[in-house]
Length: 260
Image 1 (cartoon, rainbow, N blue to C red):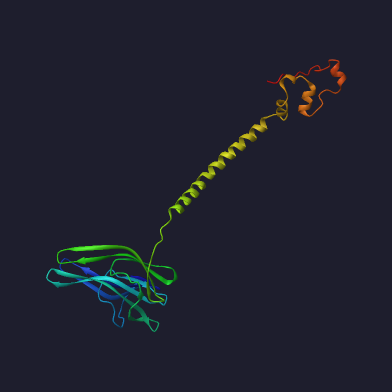
Image 2 (tube, rainbow, N blue to C red):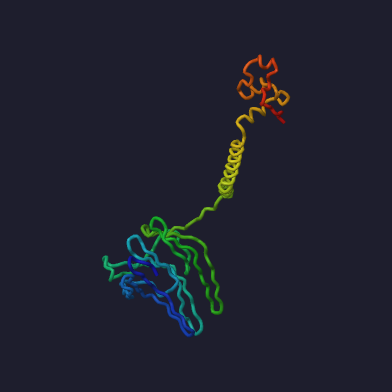
């Protein structure tokens, strides 16, 4: 199934019961505006009945159908499976949405091996990406499946296959990325600690006296000397030398405590 404009296009599938099974190659559309089903009858030779195929929309407005799986009964209780690797284009004929036509495609390039059940997605430059899938090997009494993890691109504008290759990440790039991530995680912590230390220093400075730092720089034994205190405080504590010589220092009511 694929979305095409305001419609869902459904192709193929299968139904299996306890007694029998049947594969389909018919086409139905579901209108997203009227919520109604309609059966299409495209002209031309289309794909054989199958399931597990992939569908994608081309830039020109067509629908690509590739791959798939089907089985048929060879004899009683013996089935034979078929892995399809052909490609078909379903598109409106003459631009009419009520008339469609089948066209067989033969793309060039490196084609994927036959498989079914793979994933498909639209990529850049109008390319379709195909990934994985399974290849079932059936015998009369055994069934073995091989799963894939390879990648292919189909370019609808050039009708060409390309094999996809993924580059491995270098170990050095991973280490650099990890270091860069660790730095980003640790940076807010260092910044928080720095802010806390700065705030603590500012709080201590506010509680200190403006003259405390100057007094602490003075020599303890000379704390009673007004000349030393005056030099430390940047002021003249003794108005004149005569008062000092006459023993007028310290002045009455003014006591100085020795610095510890």
